[in-house]
Image (cartoon, rainbow, N blue to C red; front, side, top):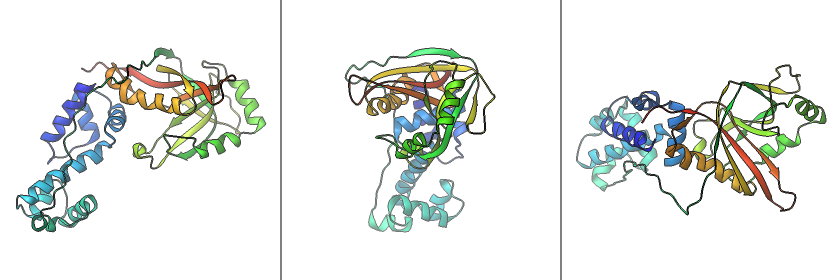
Length: 290
């Protein structure tokens, strides 16, 4: 995966002045656009589109310092008008492109290079599980992105569950992991910056499709799941595991994540306050690329 990411970075560098789409780039090495964008975001902190924009503006800055005209630079890097380029450059740099040469302004966004580093020798347990098709049944709502701490909107969602809903969920539950799960899907594209929202569902896995109007139902196809157990302070350990799935396990594995709901469940430790056993279930498929 790391080799594929670096090949794509090289492709971007060699085609900065051409039309670059996420699907076209990720197809170069045969992986899915969804998987590539997820891993790229976690490893770099940029969305693919944001990275390309930053690299183009960084190179445009160099061209302006070399004395090239604003008009030539604008059209070289794919802008449809000088005004559009000026707005983008000012938003990125704080000054107009026409001011670069006389002020000597220089801002550089270097080319990315991906490597895998093993830190602290911390192991990451994982098991691969095949699951038949099922339904996620429960209550759901759009909630704001939040990677650390307790998401109060999810707390409110949990508190809104009625006894009638809870009873129906437990009566429908008939599949592993036989626990109330927290599922997330349909995240906005800028999730890495904790901007925007995703859909969060609190519910159960079931093979049954007859559900009352009091509950939401999400159909999930038969697929492969990578399951990551963890045990430690809650929610920090769970959130750290979720991050490591994308930043450590996926880049080093021969699997790629697919566009389907991921979910987790937590069982609080009765003997240790604030501690819990959790599992993160991530939908994946075998990646035949190299």
